[in-house]
Length: 135
Image (cartoon, rainbow, N blue to C red; front, side, top):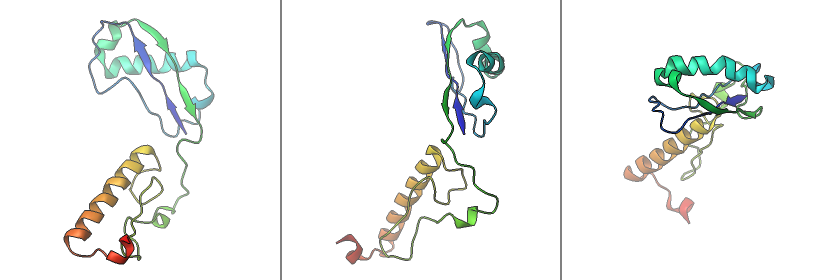
């Protein structure tokens, strides 16, 4: 479960820092909270994270709610997630659901895709590519 709570600031007010979005995985309680409650909760946190934001006039605050954005894996299920390489020559797996050491998120999918591309290049460099799989 995720809540994305972007806040827009008055143009011309410098807000420095890593970004203005906060992703809250596992936000089971926040998913049903009114926007006003989220605003009261997270604007002070944003001001602590980005001190320049304290002087900003917040023009708009919203939250995007995606209850199925991140699944909750059962304890002990990590070993069931497959790795990049398979027993089939030339077949590699990628996706948020593979073993990335991250929950199944878009970030996990990117990490998995990069790992698969790296595995392909490593195997090609070592001559491990089965040409029948490419045909």
